[in-house]
Image 1 (cartoon, protein in one colour):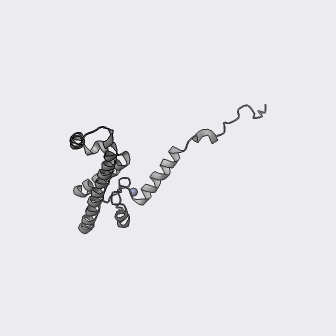
Image 2 (cartoon, rainbow, N blue to C red):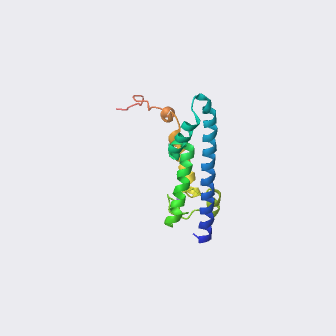
Image 3 (spheres, rainbow, N blue to C red):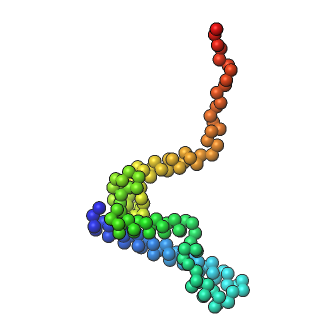
Length: 140
Ligand SMILES: [Zn+2]
């Protein structure tokens, strides 16, 4: 992996991370403004906001994304960025440009998605017909 590419990826990841945190903060602010009328005075709000850890206010989706970004930044630092977790081949630069925090190459990602679809399919065994026993003609 070229150094300039890593730099670009790192920059993209840091920008994404910043943007995500900004989004979370503004969402948080909107929610808080709506709550203001419910009997909280300004001092309570301020102290609560300070005490609150960013990790506790994240939605699952935001947390997953933030973790993926952090993990990718970690891989850049560790010098293993851009290597597929599954097959250990290099992930195509175009894919990394589009999805800087991806950990899988396009082939393995496809496999994983297919697997997820298969395992998630409800009532999977309903279509399997039971073998009818006792209907075979035994000669003798
Ligand atoms: Zn792979």
